[in-house]
Image 1 (cartoon, rainbow over the protein chains, first blue to last red):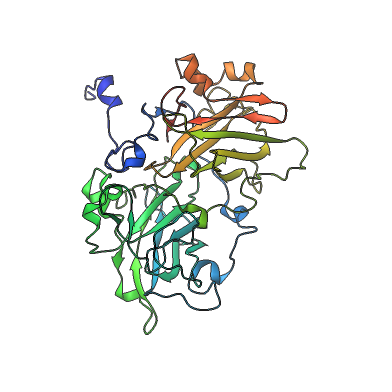
Image 2: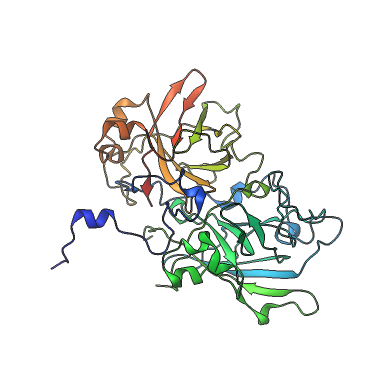
Amino acid sequence: MPEHRQPSQMVGLVDAVDPPYLAPAYRSTVLRAPSRPPLPLAGDATEQAGPEARLLLAGRAHSGEAAADLTRQHAGPPLGERIAVHGRVLDASGRPVAGTLVEIWQANAGGRYAHALDQHPAPLDPNFSGAGWCLTDDAGAYRFVTIKPGAYPWKNHDNAWRPAHVHVSVLGRSFDQRLVTQMYFPGDPLLEYDPIWNAIPDRAARARLVSSFDLSRTVPDWALAFRFDITLGGQEATP
Amino acid sequence: MSAGRTPAQTIGPFFAVALPWPDGPRVVAEETPGAIRIEGRVLDGIAGPVPDALVETWQRTPRGIRGFGRCPTDADGRWTIVTLKPEASPRGGADSAGCGPPEAPHIAVSVFARGLLKRVVTRIYFDDEAAANAGDPVLASIADPAARRTLIAERMPDGYRFDIRLQGGGETVFFDV
């Protein structure tokens, strides 16, 4: 017999992997979090399909090797600790998601974004825009070369600092796989104070956003390496 | 099963350094026969503009056709997508095998923003498709008519208008995908 569940309990069911919409310690959620829980979709064929990544690449700011190497987008090299960030994109059954679009953006080594609204009084780096993209290969693997982003203060609460992070966007094979997240660095003492990372209820799920140092993929005399594997959600149709 | 799903995090306020691209809002070129403009605002719980949201749209298309739009909101919370109006699913599309009741023309939407720890997902339907809308299983699953109306874009002289209210009065219906 299936276990009895009252409808009211179902409504309150919290997804332990994703953060909730309302997390008051992260102040910006207070006026933006929907007040009603999302409804199940009574038909989801549209959401189980998605765009082909190759059709979304025309007219981008960078192409070719420079798109995935954020240290080669300007006349000179950016300041900071050069790193490679790599990993695999897998679907919910552990199969590689090949040919999908991975986009990243981040602050420079001083903790400042090349964005007009970032007012943190750290220097801009004329040799660093902090944005890149690539497509995953047949094994679902991706790789970027960049510099380690700096931590930076934000106005969320008294003396609030974001841990160093790289924003990661994955298109996925279908609309329901679409993911935007942030990759963190191992051993960062700011993580435990960060309301965005800590909004994820499950400790093990939180830990999956912390990349691992990967000595095997460092580039000798050139760059350190961090590994960040990504597992998408979605309830793909069985082909 | 694999190691476990990767959690979402907010897109933050500075995604514009990377994600928007010039053709993002134009799913088709504006001069394409039948092209429509869908525009609206993203609003917060006190009906204020959300000036740092990213709206993405997806509609099923034949292979080789893009079907995907991406537009950041401006200082007024406004976004615009130029696309073709999707057709009703002829053989039914309520499940992935296409065996359900027919669905009215619709576009799937994601909204990302600072303060949204994960995206919200909704659908755009069209108010000049009343007959198709009346038989649509997703619209039919929403009991409250006022809530159902939040999914229906309003015909305007030059296209359609679709506002997205993240919270509060007239809150848009969002879906769990």
